Image (cartoon, rainbow, N blue to C red; front, side, top):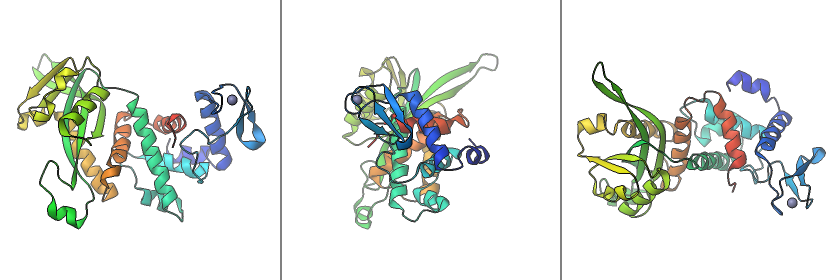
Amino acid sequence: MNLFSFTANFTDEQSCRLHFKEERDKQGVSCKRCSGKDHYWLKGKWSYQCKSCKFRTSLRSGTIMEHSKLSFLIWYKTMFLMTATKKGFSSKEIQRQLGLKRYEPVWAMVHKLRKAMGERDDRYTLEGMVEADEGYFTIEASAQEHRTQKAGRGSKTKRNVMVMAESTPLEDLENKTKSTQCGYFKAKVLTNHKVDGVNETIQEYLEERSIVFTDKSTSYVDISDFVELHITEKSSKETTKETLKWVHIFISNAKRNFLGNYHKIKGKYLQLYLNEFVYKLNRRYFGEKIFDRLIIANITASGN
Ligand SMILES: [Zn+2]
């Protein structure tokens, strides 16, 4: 979807609603009262009616748009803006671009979309050979927290993020050169005690048959319990460039992106910004289809 096809397809509220209905029909509607799947469409009411219990489901109900007062057109424009560039937009910028008076509803909409992106990616686990390492992301902190912070780990002005990347070796036998190709990524803010947090993250987001590469950090002592093989390497310049190449590229790109787009991020929202960054990165070859995929994520997300 580029700007020209977007404006040609979505001229008004009606065209967005019709498109959303079409996509929702493909995913199927489930009745909140009786879980029935068969519905009539009540055209004048923009609602579905359950064939067995007559319960009505509005076009928005059960999607992340459920409690939003913003129009379908505004949601569509926002989904377009969020997927149109790799870079992304802040809520402030989206508010400005759409000429909306109030900031809060825009902020809520954008965060719901980021949440839906994360849920979509959480349906998949990483597999094969996986690089894993932590990045320390700067977050907004009070002046007091800045004064009393400890450097590095456990700092109040930074959050620990576990970054994982599928990394397939490509061996060029003729030139005897080795390189890796990256697949899907994950980035999760670690909230609880160090080793526990790492263990939970590895267990939840990696296939049991994976082979994991990390440095020799003590937080990684249990990783081998959850995967096929855990290979550690002492941190060095070569590790950063080769064994853990993709996670390091991810960390520096994500940090640069956040700094350029959002200025300051509160710790409790960092995961949402990571969701968007990872979602788009994982769909980097989708081209213009990424817009349609985000609409599906909107429909199938757990909502509110
Ligand atoms: Zn029903």
